[in-house]
Image (tube, rainbow, N blue to C red):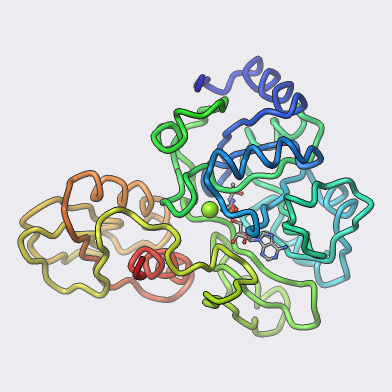
Length: 317
Ligand code: TXA
Ligand code: MG
């Protein structure tokens, strides 16, 4: 489990490693990803093994630009508008896939669609350039755990695996990309994330459909209700705290907390809260508290993604 600060040489070595079919964890603007060359089935299989991820759950393929994305997915005018508006950035588009593009069937879990995005992190873009291949990358955590926003989080979850970790410091956005299905007539939000639903609706000039919670047969298996789970039980909409509980606070007036305490944003800034969310869950979980009590967070803007992750963390396992 070598961990390297992201120098030019480290990025070149990581690109080499990807081409050799091995795994590299790297920062994106959202969370750290666990990357493999998306064209090599064996390499992609190693991602599923390292994470303990069910194979029916497809991966996001990361590419350097729209041109590269158009080689593996069929873009209509609407998809191109979205890519132009939000790439590079935290928007993943689910589109009809081009089977001739050579992307491993395992990456798309055998679906006739593919999830693609152009990440905005300079290190991710340098790695894509160094590898010269599309990179399949889920979040670099053990399946079902909280996503990593630092290299140390990756090491804590996957440190025992044969993975090169590129350390680029903490990620800026802190929640995963928004997953939007534009493979059909109606655009459907599968996962709220770093680009707000409102921003997408403004660009498209239409309302988004939502298909967020379908446990029986998830179209986007990140929808599995028990995803993003800390060990502790999570109690939502808490207005007070009882002994034995840790407090995940939001805003200027948290209730008194007898135990472990993190405020996601004392100024009630949703951007700051998103950036702090996963690290805060890890810290409170490590405090040993049986329950993490979570204060109410507004459902607007990035609040939709934050509350989505918190509801999953609170869902029964
Ligand atoms: O911010 C992010 O998106 C991070 C960074 C590393 O890019 N990646 C990430 O990947 O969160 P992952 O695998 O943890 O989440 C990808 C989501 C999953 O919910 C998966 O089911 C969904 O995208 N997905 C992938 N391909 C899909 C497809 N063809 N149709 C529907 N959902 C798909
Ligand atoms: Mg994930």
